[in-house]
Amino acid sequence: MGTQPPAEPFRPDFSEGIETGLYLALLELIDEGLILTSDETILEANTAACRLLEREYRDLIRQPLASLFPSDKEFLQARARWFIQGQSRGSIRIALPGGRSRLFRFIAAARLRPGLHAILFSPDLIGEVYRDAAHADAFWPRLAAAVPQPVVVLDDAGRIAALNDAARAFFPAERREWLLQPLSRFAAVTWPEEGEAPLARIEGLGEAPVRARVLGGPQAGWRVLVFERLPLFAAAPLPAPSSTAPSPDPLAVALAESPEDSFALQLEPLVDLGPRRLAGAHARLAWNHPACVALAPERLTELARRAHAIPRLTRIAFARLPALAARVPGRLTLTLAAEALRDPALSTAVETALAAGIRPEALEFALDLPACAALDTEAAATLLALSQRGIRWIAAGLDEAALPLEQLARLPWSGLMLPASWIAGLGRDERLEALVGGTVSLAQAMQLEVRAQGVATAGQRDFLAALGVHLQQGPWFGPAVSAGEPLHVRGMD
Image 1 (cartoon, rainbow, N blue to C red):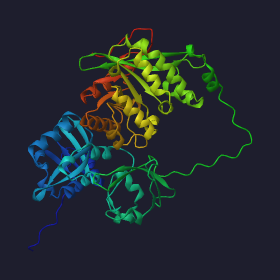
Image 2: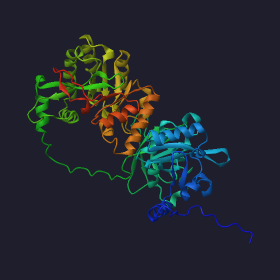
Image 3: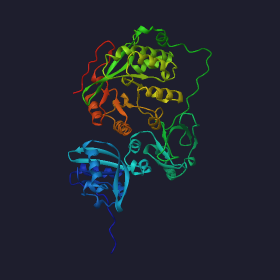
């Protein structure tokens, strides 16, 4: 009667069998947009995809995949990321009608079967804050899409400008008016004072207060809040008062009283997969004690911390370094703990090692995350002074509570180390893979050298090499050996 029939954006296709039809019907229950594609053509799309892309179903189905992108160049880049590099998470810009475009987060499942791929996408609210072309596909939007922690962006007026999916747990359905509203409307925020750790305490977003690290935002006056991994936490109960002091740890006491000759340096090979050569060694202190056979370095540090022995052990390690410098090709790395940075004798120990024949450019210090968190003004001055001598400094990993991105930019780091806990998840955890990829992109953009520790398989080695991480160390390349033994390297082919 002159009226248009109602639009039917999706109708399950049972032509390939009942199982395929039911599978496609179930995809209608997904709130995110979903498209099934070949390498060149859009094969199927759900209703959410039609809504997000602002197109009718018939205008999507069987259309070239290139029609989703603002330019041929962006299409080729997206196809390479999805189908060649196998990138599973990130941000990407998609064309909308009228010459417009929008940034979307994506999850890609390449090769469901030969020639069939699935792309799941939703608006990238974090990335949309970075509208400047210089930030179109920068590290921050890709990292925000990958990290599991809730992330909230506040503008210079304290209004909620954007947040990632994890942060929505703090804003129930009845609070959908959050966007562009002041955070103070929903919560009471205690901001850190100048000189304090950049942690804000926030009340009102749940049954218990939450903490968030405060980072600089994309524009002047903006802030980024990165919440703790657990959205809610209860205050730890205070211990009951006790009239007796806790008994000392016998192992910590033994460590503190052990003579210097009970400690020895062990060397782990560092390889460069570019020229396929030994690039140096990472020196770690080992304790020769009957109860501590094959004690992990992290466990020894923890034990030394209880015994208040870290400065002493650091000085012992420095005393052994000159004997190694002539035998280890390339660089010699030593990890420093937070207590070593605060030791007034650190600079003297370094100068003694340099006077004994170690070249400054061959010596580098890796700061573990507690040491990065302890970088106050005095420790930063020590780092700056030694870097002026030519000594290299490596940040041993990124962490929202220990090494914020601003500190990574301001201090004279020469490199960034990917921690073994991240490397262990490669091939098993897509979020960690995205985090590793984003961190490598950030470091490369900042002209920081990237190295990976804890490489244990050929797959991990090859994944990192494909990202351009050629400096690697870990059990795949050979075990740690005592300082008097030659380094045997394997696994580079």
